[in-house]
Length: 275
Image 1: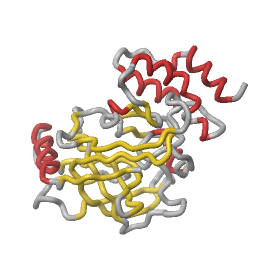
Image 2: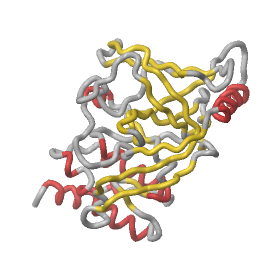
Image 3: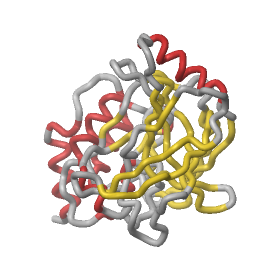
Image 4: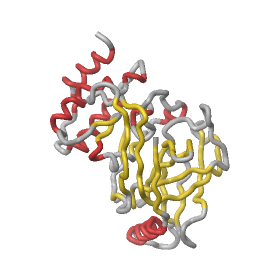
């Protein structure tokens, strides 16, 4: 039996299937457990989970499965991330998985939660399916989002104390004077930005589309996707970004949330195609 077949059996009979009754939380639970497995071949990333997808399809009859994601929850699932520091030394996987989907990298996947930006919408999703629907393999996949955006500039590419690349960004042309926000140093990356055909360098600019207004913890922030332009009308996902309020004086959490909300409301709304 092939490695993928063995993993199929392990997933169907083991705890990786997930137990949460909510389909969105259950799928995240499944992916987090599954993405921690070591696969010999990156091409097995989607086929190896197909057995579970087939079972999920019986529970999500009206949904569409695309490259490791479900169309009905695609927007709220866009802010997947990894805190595995090894990803910062790895290139993006060279497969046909779109950059906005978690199987595009080899790492343990987690998700942020929080309040969605009200103006964010999924305008279009396009793909050509390869093989059975439960395998999820596609080509020419893209999503078009409409939401608040801003431009950022990479100000530093250096070595952090843990010997991994340290990246710093600034917001280019804030939408309002005294916006009162900043980007936290150490940009979370999906892969090693310093390698490959297009390594980044200081001065490079990126587009950010914001997904969350704030998180409900002690440090409110707005989270979004860091995107790099790859053609006249398309972008690739590079990682995610956190924008924080400047905490001068004794502002309350409500004050900080209002700063973030005012900043997001002032940003221009545009449509962005991500491949």
